[in-house]
Image (tube, rainbow, N blue to C red):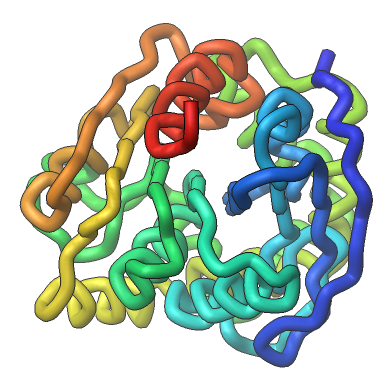
Amino acid sequence: MPAATGHQLRRIETNGVQLNVAVAGDGPAVLLLHGFPHTWQLWSSIMGRLAKRYRVIAPDLRGFGASERAVEGYDAGTLAADAEGLLDALGEPSAAVVGIDAGTAPAVLLALRRPGLVRRLVVMEALLGRLPGVEHFAGGAPWWFGFHAVPGLAETVLAGNEAPYIDWFLDAGTLGRGVPDDIRAAFVHAYTGSEALRCAFSYYRALPTSAQQIQDAVATARLTMPTMAVGSYPIGAGLERQLRPIADDLVGHQLQDCGHIIPLDRPDALFALLAPFLAADLPK
């Protein structure tokens, strides 16, 4: 079962949208950015442990979960600006930023654009647009990328059938082990309804824009902060290979017998990596 988080839920305006944000603990800020089909509750099994030493900030990304269903702004650049505005609204001058899946691209773009704001960077289980170094998906992206990318199609087809669709991703992302019932129910609720689905799929529809934003950013900037890339199945070392040419200080880890949804499938293994990495530049 997930560890108790001891969090407070807050409604915070940033970059023109209202975000639902879970905040726990005190200390240097750690910002956690989830992916699809998740909410801030993706981090439930590690948030409480991190909160013993850090101020942990876990938003629902714009349009996701209980955050505002924005009409637009699902590209990585806008999501990065949301994160920057959130830290500013909370009075945090810097943060360690942790992103997975859909949260990886905005985390990386924030680090490239605002290196003074990102103390340390951890990214997991995503590929970054057109950056070289990856042989994954040589035959094309997974089928759902195309399905989600067609405006209006997926939400029309899936409305009323959200639970089995979300279940499929959760089961595949944990190698058949599934997720706790309360977390599963929260995810299904968050993605139920055509408007909730429209927002989630808008992220996929913005992927070409996000890819161009990252490509433009790496033309003039590097990841100068300590960076960690964590892979499992199916991405493995793909993200690490993409980041290697643009990162000054990169460490990579591959978790065995672990599905795509690392924070729920192998939370203890993830925390064992995060704890020393995040603490490395803190006072002893």
